[in-house]
Amino acid sequence: MIIANRLVFFLAILITFYVCDNYPSTIQKKQPLVIKRVSYVGLLISLTYILSGLLFETLLPYMQYGNERITTSITVTGFSLVLTYLSFFAPYHQKFLTKDIKKMMLVVQLLLALSTFTLIDPHYLIKEVVIYGGMYALFVIGFAGVKDRMSIAPIPDFIKGLPLDLLTLFLFLLSFSFLNGVFFDQLF
Image (cartoon, rainbow, N blue to C red; front, side, top):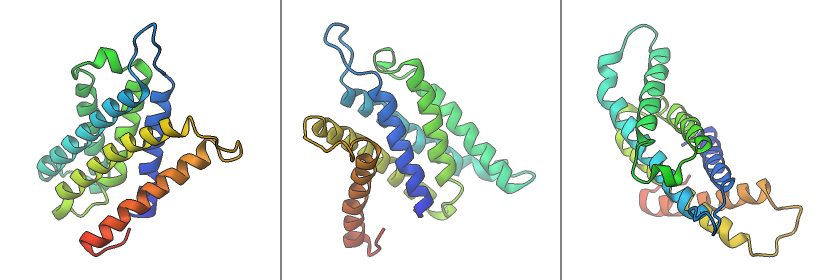
């Protein structure tokens, strides 16, 4: 994953969390907790990302016509939109998904798919898609947990918000890059 892909990946995580955080839980209405909502949405996006990657890998040889770069982008977009739309009918969708969260899911899915599917070597596409999908789900759920814990911590005002969120995500990346270096002999 190159640095531009990582930045798009972080942007997708931040968008997911911030949109889900706009609908906080309330005791009176019995809405789900932010962490539950982020986990549900993150897992749905991760699942649709992996499925669209599998469809892309399976059907791309049959859809080569015209300019290859344009057809590949259109194919990725089509698979991502269709599968994300189908995920709106997942169990408990009325409890967790709002109109704004559905819009966010479409945008995040397109960001993730367009930034990775066209750049991955076709021989390793399925492996990489499963790894990126799992990383997205793990990072979103971990980030929601960290943000929940940071809400009770005394943090100076100048670092609150986006600077602290980016720092948290880069620390996640460094910790998982360490595991990547230990097990796969490559750093970052």
